[in-house]
Structure formats: structure tokens, C-alpha cells
Length: 504
Image (cartoon, rainbow, N blue to C red; front, side):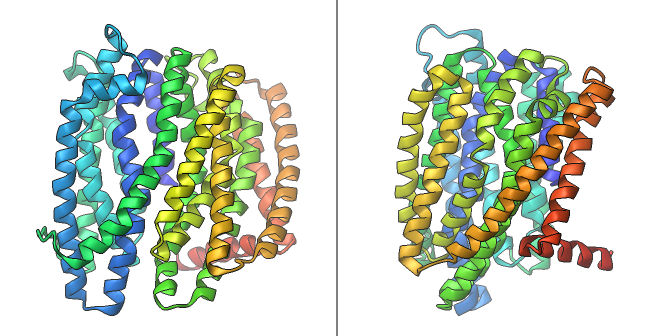
């Protein structure tokens, strides 16, 4: 939560300090390095490295497992060094492809090219950081992977304010903050690796049998994640085409849905992956299905009310967070329209992630790639159909629809592979969650309208009350009603809170 809140603070700083033309250029330049971060940290490393490393920890000696990690670090460092160098060299071609701008370069395009060259080495830093995170997750240490992104956000915010005077164009201070943040994410993990008695070193042995197993699992997963990221690249292309500010509108809207998605959806998926991997290696499929069912119900318990809350409060939230400095009321309207349609896919974004991780736990990475490819094609088709009538809203809706297709198809094939995963139990729980979320939505809507009349929305305090009073009341109502109905997910949340209070 801290990491994602700081991410929102970072985006608020960007919206405040930089005009839409400049922020569009930065987001295009940051798209590829950030894309690879998500592919490595949230996909390939989890699917390729964790199952094999966990298998070594279970069936072999700790020394053999540490040797595998050292060899993987060496191979990853060599590969990403080459990728970073190629990115710097071919930055003009890459940016022109993303923006579909092939004529005489505009100032906006040239800025995006220069920023891309500065940002590309971040790929090497975050790749190594992601691999170290995978090692610690396999050793049941989740603190660094949760808090490392906070250092990136703090670094970007700090550099944006303290280094801007050293550059002719202040946006380059933000780019330097990205590189510093990447290095800090590596440094944060070193003490935790030491506590786990992990020898941080690099070895070179491309013939290591474990490395080939990781590669066979990682490669299709990497391309599967790439397929998902292609959707974002296509959205960026089309948003650039729609006009100034549309790239930023999509970015800010996506960042807002990414808060609940990353805090709960990705966190739950990441936390249950090692457990599902151990169950799969031990042949305990029933326990794997129980863990998977719990993961799906948990993400739905959070994502459904989050969807309702974001839809009802989308404009007040954006106005509070971003509408100041260079971010005007038109930008608020554009971002809120995109957020409306992105929110509809929250449950599918999280559900598909959990289901894909179940395949990864069973060392099956090809099928999720095929399904993701189908989803990508459907996203492009939906983009073409919806972008004309709905503009940036159509691009967001296309992502939500294609993610829903991704989740449904993964579910069908997973049940063919391991049998029923408790559809009735999940459906009953989800039905109750939807009913409670609608009740919460009515309460939030009424309180938001009342606050707007009593406090107004022109002052900062008015905007704060317009968001936090309805949001707080809705959250209390939803969780309280869930406890009264004895929803298992709510009881687990209360149990966790009670345990933390008793140990504090």
C-alpha cells in the first residue's frame, strides 16, 4: 500500500510539474523499460525461476540451489546488458514505431527519443532486482519485493524536485530518478539476502541443467507477458494518434486501477505462487485447488467493491489527486472517462493473474501464452471498433473486455487440466460480494452528492471531504455487512487485523 500510494504521489508530481506534451513524451519513453519490469518482476521470473528454484530447495541441497541462482544472475545480467545497449542505439526507431510518427521529427518526438536513451539502462537494473526478489519470495521473504517499488517512487519524486535545475529540460531529472530508483531496489534486498544466508554472487555456466529448465519455462511466459504488454503499446500508439493529453489520460487512469490491482491482486497471486508450486511438486492437487480458490475469492472480495467505488468517485478522486498545476479540468474529464471503462475490468485483470500463476506453479507456461495471444488479438479488434465512438474510453474498455476473455478461457482450460476448482463456492461468494458492493455504491453515491452540496469542490478541503467521507463510510459498510453475513474472506481480514494488533 505504501508503495502504491507513493506511486500516486509520484504521478501527482508529474501532473503538477510537467505540461501534457512533456508528460506524453516521458510516458512513451518509460513505456518499454516499465514494460520489461512488469514482464520480469510480475511474470517471467515468477513463472520461470520460482518453480525451478523451489524444486531445488525441496529436492536438492541448499548449495545446489544457490549455485542455480548465481548462474541465473550471470545469464540475466549478460542478456539485459545487450538489451539495454540495443535500446540506446535504436531509440529513434523504437519511439517512431510506438508513436507511428515517421515524418519530420517534432519537438515532442525528439524529447521522447532522448528520454528513451536515458531510461533504457533501467532494464538491466530492474531485471537483476526482479531476480533477487524471486529468490527472496522462494525463501518466503516478501518484504523487499513489496517495498522496493517505494524506493523507485521516492527517488523519482526527490530527483524531480532537487535535480531539475541541473538540466535544460527539467523532465530529465525525473529520468535520472528512475535510474537511481533501480539501483536502490537492488541495494534494499542485499541485507535480506544475507539474513537468508544467500551468497550474492555471479556465476557463468550456460550449460547448467537448471538454467535450461528455467529458460524453457521463462521463454513462453516472457512472450506471454509480452503479448499482454503489446496491448498497452497498441493503446499508447492509438492514444498518441487521438491527440495531445490522451497518452497521459490513459496512463493516469491505468495507474489508479493499478492501486487495488497491485496491492491486493498481484500481492495475493505472488504470495500463493510458492505454496501452489510446493503443492504441485508434491502431487497435492486438492491443496493446490483449495489455495487457488481462496486466492480467487480473495481478489474478488476486494476488486468488485473497488470497481464500484472507482466508478462512483472517479471524478472526485482525479480532481483531488491531479487537478492542479499543469493538470486542468479537461484533463480530469479525459482521465475520468478512461477510468470508468478500465474499472470494469478490475476483477478480470486480477483473476487472470491468479489463474495464470496456477499454471506457472504446475510448470505449464505455454497455454497461458496462447490464451494471452487470443486476448491480445481481441483487444486490437475491440480497439478498432471502440476508439472512434468512445476515444480513450474505447481503448480502456477494449482492455477490460480482452482481460475478461483471458480470465474465462484460462479458467476453462485449468479445470480441464486439474478438475473443478470450486465454481459453486466461488460463484456464491461472488454473488454476495456483488450485492454488498451495489449497496455500498448507493451509499457512496448519496454521501458524495451530499458532500458536494455542503462543502463544494473548489477548495482542497472540500475535495478531500468529497472523497474520504464517502470512501470511508462505504468501506466500513461493506466490511461490516460482510462480517454480518459471515463471508469467509471478511473473517480472514478481521483475523489478520486482530493478530497484527495483538503483536503490535
